[in-house]
Image (cartoon, rainbow, N blue to C red; front, side):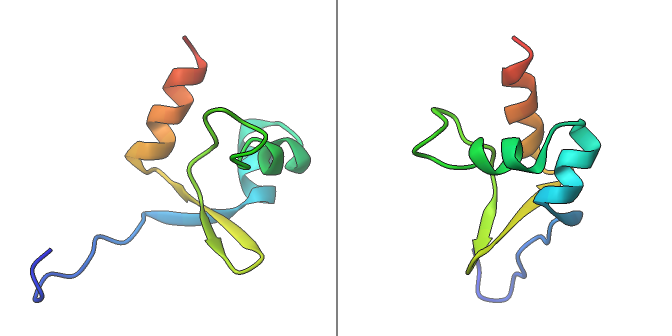
Length: 70
């Protein structure tokens, strides 16, 4: 990335509770499937200290979702 370029910010940052609500699963399921030690292909996320956030609308999250459907 060029020094003058700004990174593209995510469209919408959501927490595990909101992702669970949108996908109609439990919050625990989202947390478990975000952990590399638990899931072979963890849900793409960003850790901010003890907080976990998801980039709703990102290509990484969409690709993960598609892989689950196959």
